[in-house]
Length: 640
Ligand SMILES: Cc1cc2nc3c(=O)[nH]c(=O)nc-3n(C[C@H](O)[C@H](O)[C@H](O)COP(=O)(O)OP(=O)(O)OC[C@H]3O[C@@H](n4cnc5c(N)ncnc54)[C@H](O)[C@@H]3O)c2cc1C
Image 1 (spheres, protein in one colour):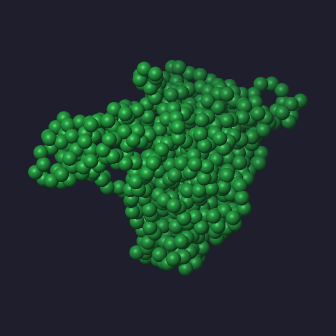
Image 2: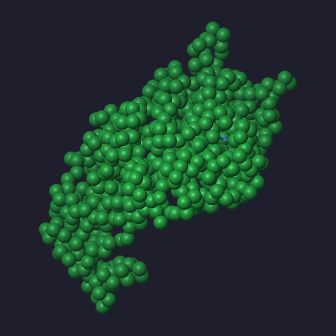
Image 3: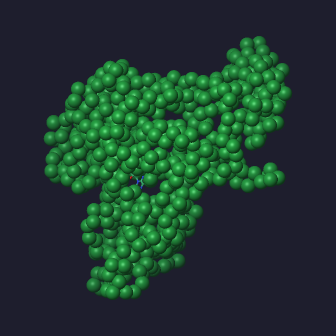
């Protein structure tokens, strides 16, 4: 805020200048999305990849499937679009950050070059202007330079090779420990490998991303179930610390009449069977119960399986096949992403909204013949709590021969019986976890991922794994890894944006046709961006790290900046017209001198959500009172 005749008041930053760069603040690992998007716009693709990879060992996978909280927070999505007469049309659409991350990874990630080359690029990367983005390289450098005392090779046992366990292992290896990951499946990567379908996430990409983690010194022992092949008690004896990151991979049941018996499966069990090429007895009329993203993964996968089997055995399997997806919620309330719903509709999924299951009907032989539903009149109460209200009089039976329940997952902690008796649970199946340290109630046992915070996004599991690694470091060395952040303002001479960037519409990501998708169950749906598309989309980024800074000493209060602003985000007001706000008032008085009469001063107010960093205000200012400045945060790694 600039105060006429006064000073520029700097708002203290919390290290990620959260109010300014909303995409970075929204990301659980604080990836500098703005940084890699702007690097793509400038054609610096390797730098873009290195920025994305810094805090995230699963950057390439996130480029394909991340839930992208950064996009939900992107300020471009909040800028109003107006028609020729200045009337509001709609808000603009956010930058396609996830698709751009995929593009950067395709150019310079493990999918594009040998691991050795990639790691030396990561290790030697010193960003010109750091924004807390070079985390991996910084961690390595800090260890090499002795900025913190590295672990001296103690082994750490990690239960589960999902994104949480592998992210913890990745950071522990960089910190000088010897992580050993125990995984019950025959393949690593947890739900990424046995849950997320291959048409969204190619298996080769998972293998490459995991290979990079292994190269850093992480040992992964697949096919070892803790509690069956080795006990938790043994692991606690043999290792300096333990991280439990076994996820929540059991399908929840509903307890309906008819639920137990042939051809009723949990949704994630179906996905696992398909991923591991295991046979499962499926019919040709399938009902999927659920309305979230996992239900769509299940329905779209089973649709592909039926289409594929039909194509292979057309002579034997005649007759119609159908996949119904039945959700409690209305279309507008469904928790699944809009894109999943649209693509599911295109592929031929029969969607039914507003129905709750009451019974799985079986015939006298025990075979499934349908699911009976009752109408759901309301899913949430006034406080948005899940509290469904049903109308028992309105019923519907959907005929089918197979039922897939996709109504949530829960963990299986049977392995605690031997060696985990001191790991307390806050409710059955869920351990008590200290939210800041991720420590369980047992000494030296930490918890990460879905098991620590409930089922969320892949990137939440990554953040949680990294946090657990820091806690293990503290537990073993007695020291704390501190990341000090220093914020600096760098004035930008001759700051200019791409011509017409404010008018460019979000560039759509090309997808395969529904017919192509159903021909091959592993055919990837999203095709990604070409160079031209990526650079064009990236050029839409508002570059929120750059901001106009007003020098109140120079400002002559002409109002030219407000006049020229295309989004009307600046306003010149008299201080006396502002609502009195005690903190603001005190800050202004402190800056101007305690006896200042505020009513004689004016202020320029800026609506941060509307500012598109076009710099027209700075160009227009006759008194050179406005500079475009890059606000940046440098991170320094220390241990104390
Ligand atoms: C079908 C599906 C689709 C999803 N799609 C997306 C998406 O598109 N985007 C997104 O952001 N998130 C998605 N998610 C969420 C994301 O995959 C999870 O949040 C994430 O995988 C959780 O990571 P985790 O490491 O905590 O657990 P998991 O990934 O579940 O990994 C836990 C691992 O522990 C192993 N394990 C369990 N018990 C034992 C034992 N006793 N001994 C040894 N090993 C054991 C398991 O086999 C598993 O490999 C999806 C989830 C599912 C189920």
